[in-house]
Length: 411
Image 1 (cartoon, rainbow, N blue to C red):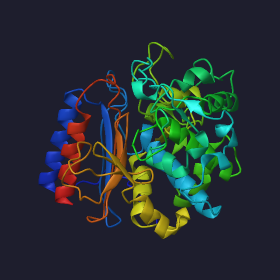
Image 2 (cartoon, one colour):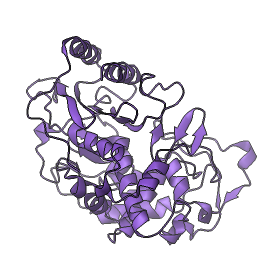
Image 3 (cartoon, helix red, strand yellow):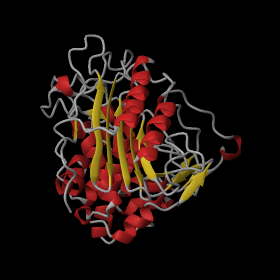
């Protein structure tokens, strides 16, 4: 199984669709939806489009976006975590029905826990506890890997784990006095004691906390507890020969001038993240987490999508398990979930109705996405930094629909 070819020069569509795509991108940049973008589209294993637009530094415009510019993947990180976990799960003879406490026993040490309303990820305030759950408790031993993979665990969508992990880290070009292991251990204690927001069932509550725990499970199955980066390196990056992808790019010696910055953070870090992860929880635990933290090029994100489309044996995930992962497991309010994967809804605002109903993928809060259409044999990796002007800036959904709709139509 060969890897995707690297592009040394931009590859473009035929004249008319290329002009249409250029206009979609130009409109998004001019409207301030994002200042930088790269897209790679692959059909039948052949690169049909690989191009970059905009500026890494939109104010000075000294650094145009390059094909090899690194973008903060945000929640697209989850699919690298899921891929590594499924590979390790299969190797260890576990199943999706295995309880989480078999791998992380401290998750169940608290015994039954109460239910509350969780926290709002934007305002950081506690949400009200549903009136019918005040006296309920949840046994954490009921949570299985299926629950984590389908976001049906009953864990809160979000909590301020970064506060439990310690003070804000230093800028990425300076040594942090609190090492990553210490930060993660403090965070793990919190993750194993937080109240639930519901029972483990079939209701989808998209949860970053669940993927943080899944990442720890993957690291333990890999024999490197607390070091998810090593599990992803061994199970995904090395087998697929993906050299751009990394956590903590500046701390890993990558050139910041080719790393795309994200949203200014005036209240916690007191700086604009540039070469460090935008997500507070991922940053607070030291930059390495199962739900966010990876930086990558569009090429290497597309390569993961191609590996899933091809059932690539290098991932060491049995074909039947890969098929199961792409099937519909849970649905709530139109949100359809496979094992980790987001499945296309009947009307999908995240992408385009031009994609087939069997298509699947994942988005990231920073403006990133990976989408795979098995009927069209099409993989699209679209990376932007839409949070650069502020996380409330609208327009990313409309941009994704327009760009993906065009590519699905002409390819």
